[in-house]
Amino acid sequence: MSSKNTTQVIIAGKIYTLSGYESEEYLQRVATYLNAKISELKNMDGYVRLSPDLRNILLNLNTADDYFKMKKKVEELERELSEKDKELYDFKHELITAQIKLENAEKEAQLLQEKNVQLQKENIQLDTRLKNQNKR
Image 1 (cartoon, rainbow, N blue to C red):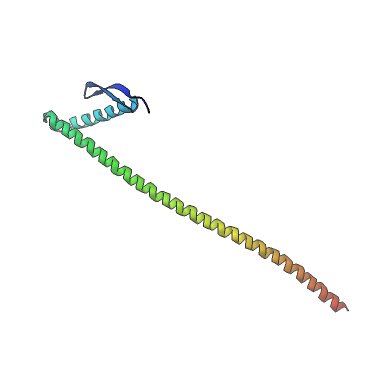
Image 2: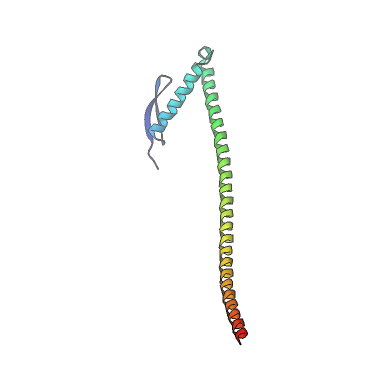
């Protein structure tokens, strides 16, 4: 199991100590995300006039909104990936089927070629016999 990491981050101008099993870089990215959300909300009309509780709720709602949008996108991408995997499987199946048909056709062509050579030999033999009989 990885060790617990502790790092200091700045969120909304205040220093917080975060700890967790994720990397320090990850914890810093989380803080950066929150700072970007807070900055985004501060640019909204009337945000600064809201009570701290309402600002926190708005931040939480926006964060949850981002989460659900990303979750939906991940589900869509997973569905697309599953469809692509199925298409790939189908293509591989078609390729294998085509390869088997090609191998069978090549074997049949080889047999026909061998039969053709045999028939040509027989034809030459018959021609030779016929010529010999005509000479008599």
